[in-house]
Image 1 (cartoon, protein in one colour):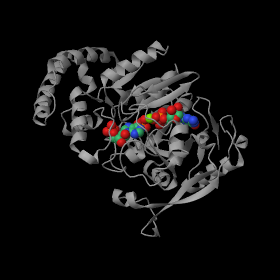
Image 2: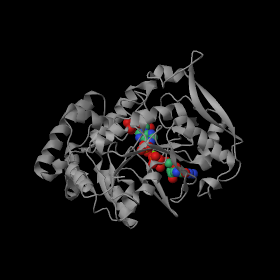
Image 3: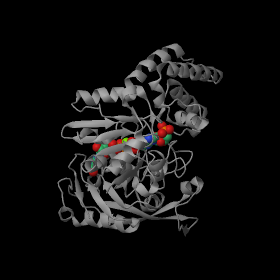
Length: 423
Ligand code: GDP
Ligand code: IMO
Ligand code: MG
């Protein structure tokens, strides 16, 4: 398939990076299309654990050209720390291409993220405080500074100084601490000089690669229900992780997308605030967190746990045109006596036909579950569907039937080869 999109089907951390790493074998380009260093994408290779925030997860393969496309907001400090770490571990990042249209994150974006969260009092979003929302807000206000501007160093320095002075005045007026703008101009000019050789016209690069018969893998960060338009607003991120965002975020057209893979865990997690119908606030939830090691890669926060939710997944199929699902972390359920699958929602005693479009309704729905017997033995060694315990197969089959698109990959361990092809 020439163009494959990988998109989170829940609230993030579904194991997208592991699936991207797996699919990277068949793709020449791996492209981040939205989000920024709020993402934490983990790939485990033997004893090595790579936690990637901005660099596309295909970086671990020499044949892959990693691309940061126009829809991404780029924090240069994180980017170069990440490049240095990856290069120390033996993978060159020289071939990385960054879109001239990608917007840059500056220290005032982080300052605003913190101030905005503080101003929300008890209604905090629980952002990653990386400045992602303020950077996208500046893009929408048309005052952002784009990556391509580093190619004209003097003008870049002037743009930082002018923007920085204006932001500083506004920050001080809002009760924030002043920033040292001249220090920022110096530091970011140096970073810009380092970014310059990576800047490219990624729209042309990607279309030319397609025309040359290359296969492209578009890597979503965050997830469907964190989507600015379709997620649980305002408890969302500020970009469009859904498949439409892969078009606007890369400049590939809708008809270029062939295969759209939605990633879901065998249960659900969410980090940050917002409605979560199948959330488990009990000891069962604690076990999911403990066994699944559900602590954020980026912020270290405990992720909120719950059962898998097929109402959400059916909505994810609609919103993304999912052609298939990858179901990860089946092994985390190995020791549960019974496992639950949410197959519907009730509101005011009546079944809902569709995923509710109002967060107030979502916050009140009562999940309807099918409870299945657990399998009580490890699935980690399984490499074929026939090697799964019958109870585990029944669990996967129920999710597949409820969601209505084929499950292709089933994750049975964090390791690179910890998966089987279900269909
Ligand atoms: P992403 O943000 O969607 O890429 O996911 P994260 O990397 O934030 O979180 C997923 C976590 O689950 C990582 O620690 C992965 O190493 C791990 N993981 C992925 N697939 C599996 C799996 O099938 N089984 C287990 N046990 N861990 C997995
Ligand atoms: P990956 O790509 C899980 C959440 C934050 C918060 C909300 C808004 O690893 O799946 P932001 O900093 O984006 O303004 O925060 O979105 N969030 C994520 N949750 N996985 C992520 O990325 C996330 N990126 C942002 O916790 O609730
Ligand atoms: Mg993550």
